[in-house]
Image (cartoon, rainbow, N blue to C red; front, top):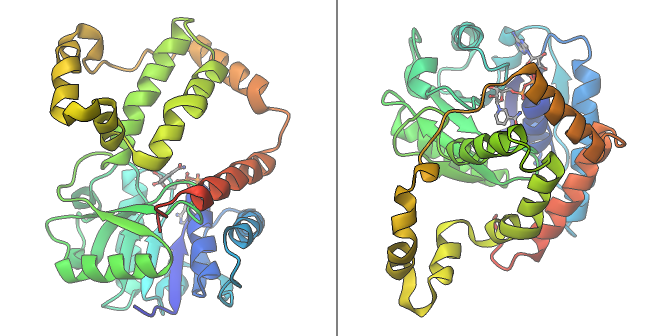
Length: 310
Ligand code: NAD
């Protein structure tokens, strides 16, 4: 679907990534973000994004869209065909923003939310036109990682889900339409399990943040980048296949340590340990430098994959 005008409400880490993806795929973007430094921050993300996409493709990039900073939600959404909300993760704030968007948007505008945790039904509360609202949950950096979880509520129109998925595909994304809404959607539920165990391992002094990161990046992280979880285990099952793999390791799944557990108490001490270990890992680089290192690696990995994810 051809969309010429998009609106970004919120231009932080995630909003900035969306803005870059929209612009670098040729769409105009109206940005509303009241933060006094919003323009500088968005432009910094945009320049890293341009650098990454130039490395990604040999072909010339499409003509960049026009970036306009505006001073109200009304101005941002008035002409927009696609609106993406990326304000801080607070339900009261998001509800206020959607009410304002709804008041000023075109009747057929698509409204996506970047929320990591809320269900679309929670976000649609009080809206007169909940049929055009859905979650479009991306991953950082939004301008490079293709996957986006598209989560409709029971009130979202199937036609809107289809149009939104088509549009997101045209800007190089791989939409995964989530069948049933659930807190934190799909990907973050998996990540939360790994995060929780990482917190325990640091808390109990079993491993440092560096050691945990290394075990992922030199080990299963490499496998996950190219075949994911189930296909990886299918191969591990050998000729006898997946059923054999589960039969072999299935009994272990009943052991107490494989059951879901609460996160460890986030004491000041644990937070300080994690922060100082993390600083020791990469505190010598600025965040923008780290983003460039990350982007170069991501581009290299995506270019190397035989089955390209886009
Ligand atoms: P962030 O703090 O970096 O950015 C939020 C931005 O919203 C800030 O620039 C802030 O100035 C702006 N803002 C605050 N009030 C506003 C208002 N009333 N109107 C417009 N803009 C306003 O946060 P983030 O990490 O970009 O997260 C934004 C959303 O994206 C959250 O819902 C989060 O759950 C989701 N998300 C985050 C990640 C991640 O990895 N950080 C990944 C996927 C989704």
